[in-house]
Amino acid sequence: MNNISLLMITPILGQGGTEIYILNLAEFLKEKDINPIVMSDGGVRENEISNKNLKYIKVKCLHKRSPINIFKAIYHIAHVVIRENIQLIHASSIYTTIVSKIVTVILLKPYIKVLITLHGGPNRNIEKTSAKLLNIFADKVVALSEVAKEKLIKFGLRSEKIKVIYNGIKPLKKTTKETTDKIVVGTCGRLTEQKGHKFLIEAISKIEVPGVQCLIAGDGELRNELQKQVNELGVSERVKLLGFRNDIAGLLNSMDVFVLPSLWEQLPISILEAMSLGKPIIATSVNGVPEELGDCGILINPANVEEIINAVELLVKNKELREELGRKAEQRFYKYFRQEVMGEKTLEVYKEFLDL
Image (cartoon, rainbow, N blue to C red; front, side, top):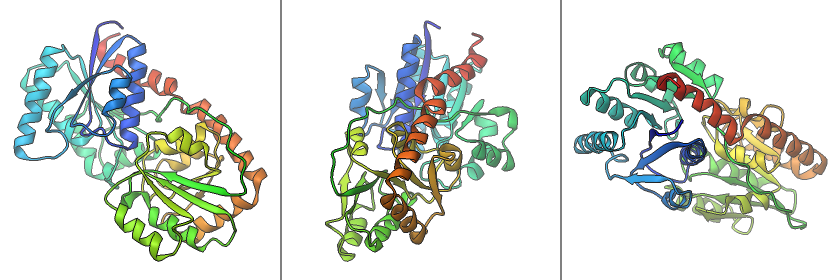
């Protein structure tokens, strides 16, 4: 597959799962002699693009939408498509999908197909708001779960346009956890309403089992509000807001239990990272999460503090159950969610449009 040039467009290289997906997929494609070019508005993961020796184009028009930025985005994408002889465009948002399709029409290049992986992000109703638009602007839609596929079809996307491909990552490096009398519960994710951190913090404040500590990695608009909650509940010694971290592997290795209390998700990368390290997982039963976890974690209802308390206390008190769920999680990860599995299935989709 030499000399295949692929443009991967995302609004921003932030701290979320979409960006990890792009990094993992681009790295895999490069090993398959495809030339992935990543375009974005910049962000905290730019250095990782450089470290992986991936070609990167930064343009200041993809993140904040405005009439002028739409025209700028069309211009820059068109310029790259011509200069780099792009044969396929893989977008990661509705906005970048639409402008990419407009570019192919303006350039009279209908053979350049536009795909989107529908990540969701801050849009909890992404399937409802996007299905009919994607009928027009996307040649293929990669859904991250069967649940997402069913929703897209329900809201009007033609079924032949959809392919389900689970997220996949490289397994994180496992290290031995330091022996201590503390039980570390933790989570990773942007500090936004979506991630439900306030429910986890409240639950930790009510847990009566001694020795439980909580680490929260990530940054976002709710940082000050969540810190205020920690202070008001008097748990500043037990709950630590760590900010954005580049050492996620080390942080996850230090945890005994991983919790994802999100109000909505697609198929979160953070769960896969914890699974790859054999961590027992508590997560809300939203969208693709039950598909992701199978029987290797504890599912709870979103925004339910009591269920978080019960699940955390169950695992804190039962080391054997922690170890059993951790083993199952690691086995499930290697069966379904490795970078190579995602990459090969994505390549199959590309081949449909490239006559390879």
